Image (cartoon, rainbow, N blue to C red; front, side):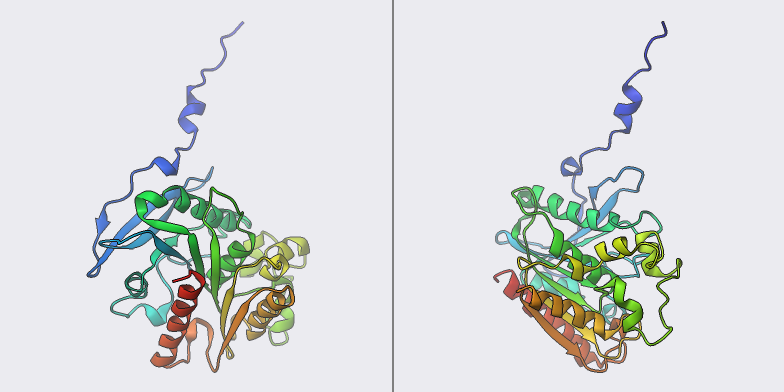
Length: 305
């Protein structure tokens, strides 16, 4: 009888525990700011390790509320530390400003649609919330005061995460969610776009690539990937900002999310941005600043700061 195959190859393939990884060395991009770039928070099977950047005060004075920023890019591309072209030239940058306002800022990767279909990116954001809680003591975080913020596709994922994050002692507690110009109901996109501008039967659309099928071919998957379908009366407070001139994600998508939250008994602040296009195209620098300031003000209130 042949000897059984040795067990060590399976042991070697077992993923390491990111909760035990050493944190990356600190950089200091701005005065008073400590940046830990590329901390591994998850190692999904068959995928690249997922990383997050952590923007922290150089000299923390106590556990800080957490703001998790989720980047956009049509679920297909994007950089974890990019809040959009209107903010790239800011000095100091948006994340430094948030740190100086009293937040720890976390910018995670998530699996893109070319790597794994939905719900993979949602699972990843659940994972980063759990990882942050596990390492909160060494990072100086108060994960009981966590706020999510996302733009475009990242706003969609931030909303889904806020509405589905598991409660319990092993993960961060989401106290609020700020959403910028994000899809909220994939099943109604064709209705909200000008006639013919969106084809729900197109298997190559960004939304189809997200769920792994054309929207008409997988209506249940499209519904499951729509924040409006996940709304309950226990949803945390939301701030929704959406440009009235957005031709990429129609303004009506922002309206749908706010309506669903309010009808369920949740709290939703709606800030229509008059004349704003996607990525805040068409706005003055002052108006772009106001969108950011409104987000910071909301996050501070939601986190109890």
